[in-house]
Length: 284
Image: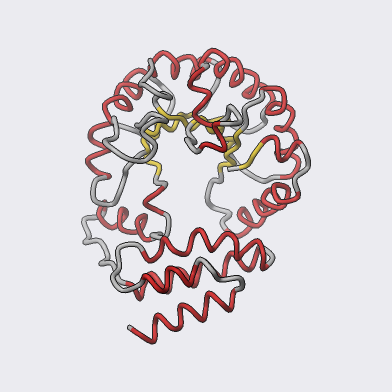
């Protein structure tokens, strides 16, 4: 998820993120990569697209109209676009014209209240958007409370392009979400934080196999892999900053790990992380 304004104003961090997409495509050449962008100013968004294309390597351009966090909303970006749907349709019409990559969109079902999503999505389809991912909550509902899968089902029923269901999806309920929404695909967000095997377990369940049981030992192994990867593509300061916010998610749901969670958020180097994890393993 990259800021149009940051790239337009030549942010070194954003330019490095785009450089990393080439590594992503090199190491995972058989997969499709979507570059998600956000912004609140139409002119800068449109001016940034050629810059994204020049510096990045991706298969789809994904415009974010779903992010609910205050710092994004203050920029009139993310889900704040749902307060001005006519402007959003106009923007997407121009975005489709100038992008050499297929344009998709990620959105919520309203800002404060549920809006007429079928009408909006049909307009987005008409201007050339290739797929729509829908988080079945309003911005006001953030990430808690029931997900309105019925709204996603209504959108899917009325569109010809792929509709991707998002919001509250786990390996325990994903088959039910497919049935409720008839969506073409599912998007997993929060559940995947610190829990990469959610995808493996979903595949296993689809194949009629039992999901793999949770274990702290496996979480530590997966976290080590994550650490090795991030430090291989970022400098130590950047990598440490990223892992401080991510590493604690690997410890969710396990007992007697509070002191290690606290230690992880204070790590400032790769070795710091590995030392903490080694201590955890020694206590298993």
